[in-house]
Length: 269
Image 1 (cartoon, rainbow, N blue to C red):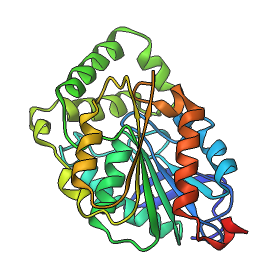
Image 2: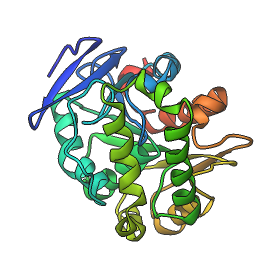
Image 3: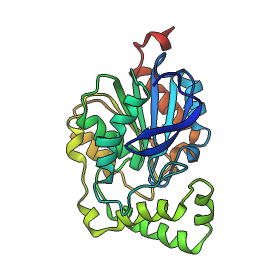
């Protein structure tokens, strides 16, 4: 696909996935492909995509996975390997469909895990790096405890109302994610084996106060990766440093993107 509209839908495996394209198209410039969190979507990135595009000069493409935002419903219940399916089956088709020629993946939480699985399973010459914001490589006790607390908040506070602004079927979105993580079978989920096969630079941006994961996630990447791993710890930030400390996060991602794409003739011009 060339000349992507600023907003629209991609038809992938019978699903309609909403997207936003900011800046130059993949045909003419490097593209940063954004992969959202477990309760995220295109809209919940806020103005971070625009700021990232302005700071890097690259195109920025964000899409909502099936079951999120305005995209088609997902098949429920989600299985413990749902992130593998996104990385191995859906994401390659998205990248092909938009005509990616070169660029980066930027993933938050679930999206970071999907980016890591993709990079560790595909020797994709188009990919020059992956930026992971609060990624998960294993399931920690703190993750399960916080996700259980989120379920309580969804059912007892205005969290459902807030999420309903962004997702057309908010209950399916929430419980599709929440039940998968709270499934006892999910405790064995572990993608650390993929890390040794990543052949591009990695950036990890981790909130020091992340309620869904500890520094153990960062340590696993540092132990398992043979590629360069840059780490930015954001003091005072929780699970969403791009929202809680946007300037620090933007600076880290921009610096990483510029280094990873430094030889690109379009950005060097």
